[in-house]
Amino acid sequence: MKRLAVAVVLLATTMVQVTWAPRLTIAGVFPNLALVAVIAITWTGGVRAGMAWACVAGIMLDLTAPGPIGPHAVALMVGAYLTGFWIRNVDPESVLHPMLAVAASSAAYSIILVAADDTLGLPVPPFGVALQLLVAASIYNAVLMPVALLFLRRRQAAPAIRSSSA
Amino acid sequence: MYGRRSQSRSTGLFLILCAAMLLLAMLSEQPWAAGARGVAKSALAPLESAMTQVAANVDRVTAVFGDVSSLRAESQRLKAADEALRRQVVELNAAAKENATLRQALDFERSFGHKMVAAQVVGRGPDGFSRTLQIDRGTSEGVQPGMIVTTGAGLVGRVREAGPHGAIVQTLGDPQSRVNVFLSKSGLQGTVTGGPAALQLDIEHSLGITASSGEWALTSGVGGGYPRGLVVGELASLTHRPSSTTDQALIAWVNDPRATSFVLVITDFVPS
Image: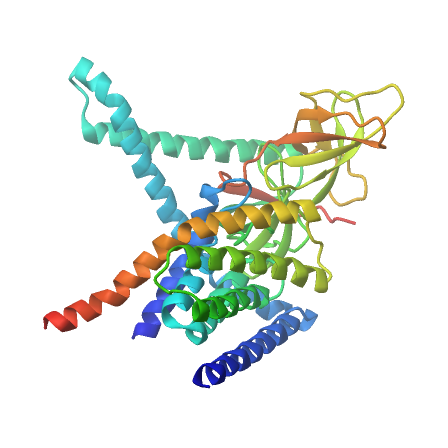
């Protein structure tokens, strides 16, 4: 049941990302809500859960993007895997570390997407443009991370509060 | 000890999932899988369409609140404004705007002389590296990859992939997009490329002729990728580069992909 709920939330997140989020474009980028959600899941639920949901969210993104099905999933999984290293070595309650983790994951995500296009023989954006988008996306997603974590922690805390009061 | 084992299990899972996704990417890129991929990509189109509809309704509600706040001063002065009526006016305005867009598109179709399919934009690309639009028309309606997409205002881009009931359009704003154009007054030729904020134009130097701001850039038809004469945008700023073979300019695109809701797909032009 919980897995179904997470799947529905990720589907809704992906749909919001490809319909509403482009209205919030700043410096050529808009928030990558799926990436933020996956990193928040990884931060609160562990690296293996994060990678599994990265796979699901990535395939959803691939279904809305041109090109083969798979590159977004790989890019999100790398983000979850990197975050896994981060969690082991820092205070998980910190606000700054998840922001840094999502910024690093955004950078890795962007590099993998460009590399995947290059490998598949698809045209890639010029280096300067790609770098500009990468930096802007990293900052934008990092700013959104505390909100996503707050939402997830509240969702996790709600059943615990209900069961303790019962 | 436990931590190291857990880490190696995570790495194992990561490698397995990565291998599976790379395999999926390679398989889905095969020509024989194009049909299945198109069908899979069309599957999310109805959801996106519904979400876009919800977004439009939210916009209308927001517009209502905006108008309410601005009309409050007026209502104090006139003391006769009615809340429901104002809401209706805003909704009618939104409908009129949509009608005007459709009428413009219809006029364009009549005057342009090409066969076209009208489509609604139901979604946009998931990241900044691919400025794409998803439309609700696909191969069942005659839309094929490579076809040119416009609005009544001018060029939008090209269909990159098409499923049975949906297609993905690569817009001119995509950093990977290239269009050959000429300038309306000077006649100079150049290439428009996409960018994160604006369209960029590299104008080829010609002896004694210089481009100027305010000129219109239209497709030149060079290379056979686009029909000649489609409006791309207006020259917004120009940077002369005497030491280079080209000048650089920024183009104010006639279409804003964030606001575009209807497009026309030219179905009888075959890019060479």
